[in-house]
Amino acid sequence: MFLGINGSELLVLAILAVVILGPEKLPEYAAQLARLVKELRRMATGAKEQLREEVGDDIVDMDWKKLDPRQYDPRRIIKEALLDDFEDAASAVKEPAAIHQRAVATVQVKRLAPNEPAPFDLEAT
Image (cartoon, rainbow, N blue to C red; front, side, top):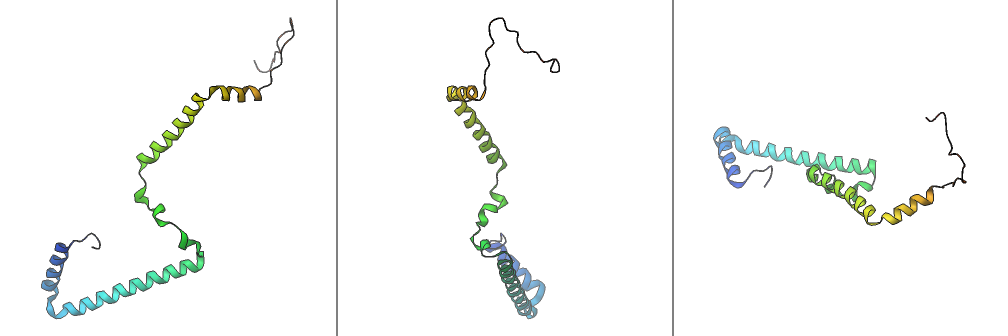
């Protein structure tokens, strides 16, 4: 129903309200509750309209279910991230020749002539 209250709990609350408030004041408090609910709905509608005016119509098209924090399961997010990395690694293993060719294409190799000493950098060692 609403607020997680089922029918039997609502019945118990109604009986408690009659006992505590008495049958004379119960209609008065019910009318106050109805006015409160109407005022809250009016305020929510006003806030929604104000938000629409300030943000624009983009807010209407927004999928609010995607932003619901209850849908996020950290285990699922981590699992998907790990599987994505695994799939990238698996595709790299499946195509080692293509990766090797790309690596060789980016590196330019200078062949030394016979008896030519290898280059030596004093600052690097």
